[in-house]
Length: 131
Length: 283
Image (cartoon, rainbow over all chains, first blue to last red; front, side, top):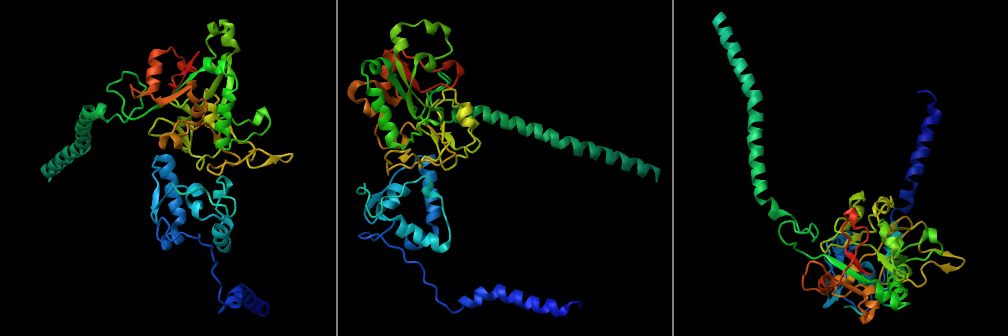
């Protein structure tokens, strides 16, 4: 091999650099973000696990049903009825976008564009009562 | 040897003819059958044609919302039109960019010649008609050209005959604006959330309705959300008991709007274009 003396140490340094992040964080416990849950409400419109994994799908389904199919009937959660709406449904209980949505989204480095148009509720001021 | 070759060629020829001919013959037969069956139930399957097509086959099923605007009542009640516009624009977070070029309009006023152009004889109208301002909005046409122009189906006609906008899907190509003969669509050239000289474009954001973003087309929605809940559109509500605006189902012969249309002479905007507008004017 020509220039083996340069290539092999170079390779070792390169691989080392690439793997540095893994070794550096190995064994460390990374805290999952703690989202602030709404006070006084126990149930969401779907099971918690579904909401954790697929809330974005549900929002898309709601969007299509409400706008395109005109299915605007409210959904039930814990005895109360909620609108199929991000602004007027979800944010009715989850009154803080910062403490609920953003905490997780920033941790996961996802930046959905919901709030380019939808209006986030004024922090910590609940919308009017559920219909 | 010779005879067997002759036989072989004969069989091969017949097979080839049969192979080429049979499928097309079969196809023709099948097609005829299909045509026959579609001719049988074709008329029944005509999906909920929202009114329109007047007198074409069976009576239309489903709803088709429409509106009658009494321009005389608006003329006699100065200030009422502004109240309607305010009720609409404040609820739907319609931005005011402060210049005519970028203006966003859901509901606005124009003089007669702008609302009903084309018929030259109409320029010889009485003074009152010329002095009147006409409330104009999306006509929620039965045959909406904007819907045909939209490449993403962001604008579409819903089951109640309202021409809807799905802001999520709008890519801002403005084909619909070119297609609309009424100028009922506005484009957000600027970010509606922005401000100029410290004055926000949306004075007070209504938290119940989203704003739009830059690069999205918007227009009157006929308050589809309110209508679905059994309410009347905000502009109609703002006219109070004056009956300057009447909203209802054009397909229901007993609805108030059908009664008004039966009793009064009304005109539509640019009816000759064949868009079949759902907004009617008493002048």
